[in-house]
Amino acid sequence: FAGVSSAASSAAAASGPAPMGFRGSVRHLHAVFTAGGVRSLYAGIGPTLMGIVPYGGLSFAAFETMKTFYKKANDHDWDEDRMPLGYKLAAGGCAGFVAQTVTYPLHVVRRRMQVHG
Figure 1 (cartoon, rainbow, N blue to C red):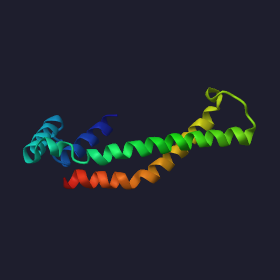
Figure 2 (spheres, rainbow, N blue to C red; figure 1 turned 90 degrees about the horizontal axis):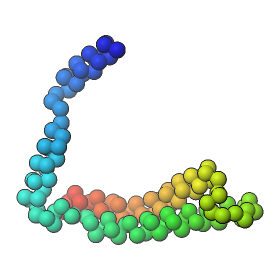
Figure 3 (cartoon, rainbow, N blue to C red; figure 1 turned 120 degrees about the horizontal axis):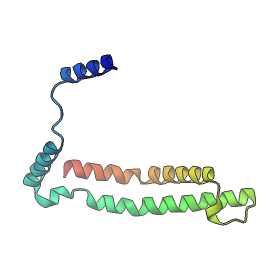
Figure 4 (cartoon, rainbow, N blue to C red; figure 1 turned 90 degrees about the vertical axis):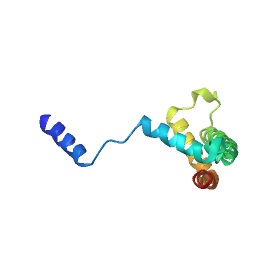
């Protein structure tokens, strides 16, 4: 693997210096705090919190609705914990898709508030 590691190191050297990492993050945090104070660190917190409630509610409601449809379609009288894993995964994925699609505009507002203050 000597050829692979030397090729990787020469590619890294050609791309320039490594990112600053933690020191750069702390420096950026200090710059944001200096420019706008504590309030600038929490830009967009309102829309973020407002987006959590509808997302959680929609996700839960969609998942429970899909479980009910599965029970009716397959004539099952079973405990919810005994639902097959594949069906739980599919219901969870669909529920997340529905919730994310509906609440996406709130995420756009949040990001714009965070970027533009």
